[in-house]
Length: 143
Image (cartoon, rainbow, N blue to C red; front, side):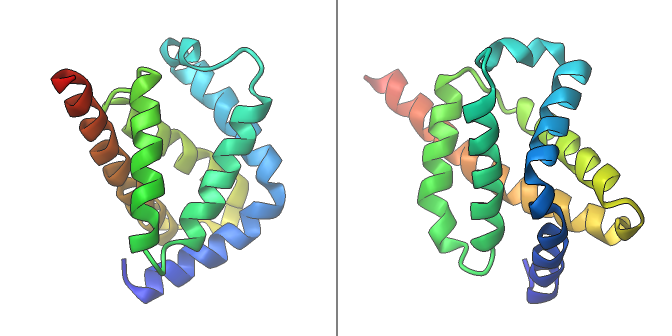
């Protein structure tokens, strides 16, 4: 990701972050309505999960300027997600749902560039998490 893209993501997120609770509430509501098949992968009480998602978004955005620092934590997160039954095809569902909710919340401030930037950033996060998931699956298969 280049500096201009990172700056746009940071600025865009700075407008959404104060509404973080609303963001994660809307995200999970939309996810479960549009993809009810994933609901069973989550706990009944979503409070902790929502906090984790918001913290992960903050962590990822803050780490865009030092992507090497994102590697280990995101790989570990991907491994944990694999343990919960997350499959590679779930990542685009989450990305698209999150981008959709962000665009709804951003209103007129959202544009094609924001769409492209957030999709790229979430694809980057997903790709690192998928490496961790694959490493976990490989380790489990050889154990």
